[in-house]
Image (tube, rainbow, N blue to C red; front, top):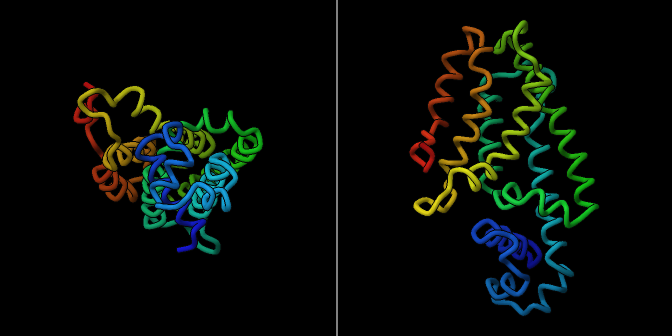
Length: 219
């Protein structure tokens, strides 16, 4: 692995585990067993590292929020979207936990992220319209625009919700299961909108992603 990629990988790990504000470039260099000067050869400061990680997150999300060309959406596509969301929530949880702080510290990143968010909502709307067209969501009741906006709000605020509302002294660390519950919340919007052909498969997915909130610190 190239040194630049090792720095990004280590930074992502430390930011996720300790929080971005608690990690300095010296911490990252020490974690990798390199001198701070070697790190600065690849990145001038921590903000550059964060910007690169945010760019990678954006590219990954836009990569999977795509409607297949030349065919209708399938339930396999739906499952892929959900699992990709789940992986992104966990892999970049530091970003979703401290998003407002991170973008406020970098105006250029803030503008880029603003445009990225708008594109994602548009992509989500196309996906929900595809689910309607494929006969999985009721055309009369489903509103693809509202579903896309609500899903984006849920996906980008779920980690913050867990940190501010669910985690407490007894359970202070995020877990993959907690992030999976966020995917359940996205999927649960569709319960009253499903067609009969889609209901068994979607209900099975709901069961897969469900975690009782009272089991993670919220009664």
